[in-house]
Length: 466
Image 1: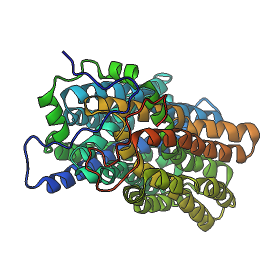
Image 2: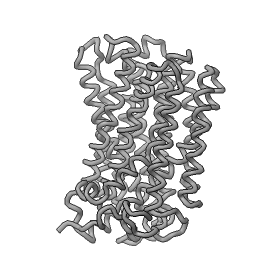
Image 3: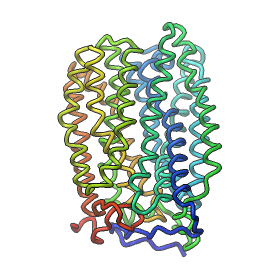
């Protein structure tokens, strides 16, 4: 019989941190798992983000050549969103197999899929050579990228957190989260380098170079992942019980409101990034007369700030109660995000750097803690599926739509302030989701001996209060 999950909509009690094969070098293994999660997610995010930069700069011209520049950019952003539409499907597919057969196999497959699709984008002929087949194939490849990324995130977080010591799981979850800004930074630097090419060279072959180079990075990532063993918690779960027959059925029937709150909780951590990078790159180069390489430099410097400050969010959430840390991280967004758009709107390079850097602090620090928060919500037997579904639905609804909605608001109102309001709405939605979620899963207390690094709190119905 399938393993029985906890009662419907009830926050599951934490599983004890179990290592069925005690290892005197467990701390070393945990660090290795963290580094593996970081390297793998960095490579996958690099592949995912170079598409975002390309969609802002060149894909509209190459694959939608018969459209006006504005419509072409919107169409390119629409293909960008296709990757996000596919991410929940990837979360379900790889969550299912990751919960039934282990995290490692799922992650090897996701990295291979991402690398293959990205490489093929670099080889894809444009509209001028194969007509309507070009954008159709582009959409299909972007869908494969999305499925791969949808399966990647949850597994990478679990590789890190399920190897981690019981009281340091929030910190180790940040290893996987760190792959996003580092991958984004590498993608931005790659396009910054090729942006120095003349326009004709950039549009004919230069933009393809990062996509083709990703094959080398994927080979490195696969080599590292193949050497890592399955997580201790998953090995214990597979040895202790038969896996849940249909993890998605269990998640949707028993924890639907936990999934819903998880979707809301991720919003600021994922959506504001795409307003600040993908949309802002298009806005700055099209409307503010920033040069292509100039604003890519602005974004790169902001990403350096993110790489530095993001881990502080996990440290803060490990030292303070999570609710207090979350409020300290997110509330400043209501001030710094409007300031960012004002400073970027001046057209001055250094003011743009200052604005982008300031606006990076709140959502970046929160993003570091988000993995540990969501990893707490579901039991190990359905954890990959549950947290992947929550996170990837969030990226589809909010992150993937952020550039196209921002561009639509700017075009419709001929003002940046509706875009500012959108960013602030993302922060408000996050607070609406994460605060009730924390009230039901408990606050953080460094040193608490549970499987997540979060204080268990009372076992309560999600609909019935704490």
